[in-house]
Image (cartoon, rainbow, N blue to C red; front, side):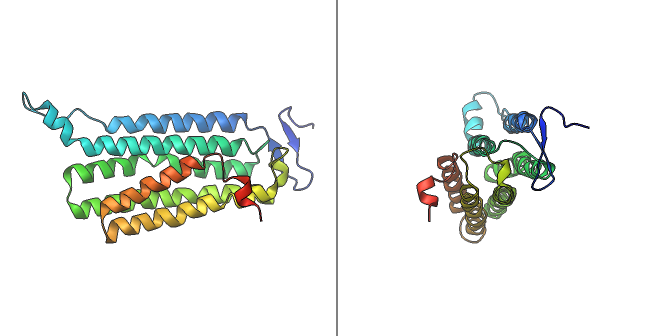
Length: 222
């Protein structure tokens, strides 16, 4: 039986390679839903007559958490978009790894809500726990990206023409950096100061935004 038009047989590994259109469409849909769910946590505060402004200002932490996570999800989407531009097709294994990447994205609304609640209604201990949870979630989110780049390095036939396996290998430095520095931000927020931990998270989001197209090729040359 011949392969479907969008599938070809992978001679070297025996794996069937499919086009990435469905992966791209599904992933974009997941990111769109996640970024929309963030706004659900924004609520009109309870207030007495003439105290609306005070009530809105009291929810400032919720607004900040929303902005940080909105930017974070946007950065993740940009990174994921750039990642899929490296490949010409996907295998079953790579599709499962991509689901791991998406799993990391869909959990963002929960630590966001915890962070907003802790900084709006909680004390310092609550804020420490919230920042540690957010940073831990972000650190664990880096793991499937590391696996994704590693898989591409081991299966260069999936890469688009002009993309070398060595380039895919060196890009693993980015999720490794995420695992380490998000983890350190969580420890900083727990043991030192929650605001410092949150600043560390924001710095890491900025790093991933700046490198959304990947580390520069000149930087990855030996």
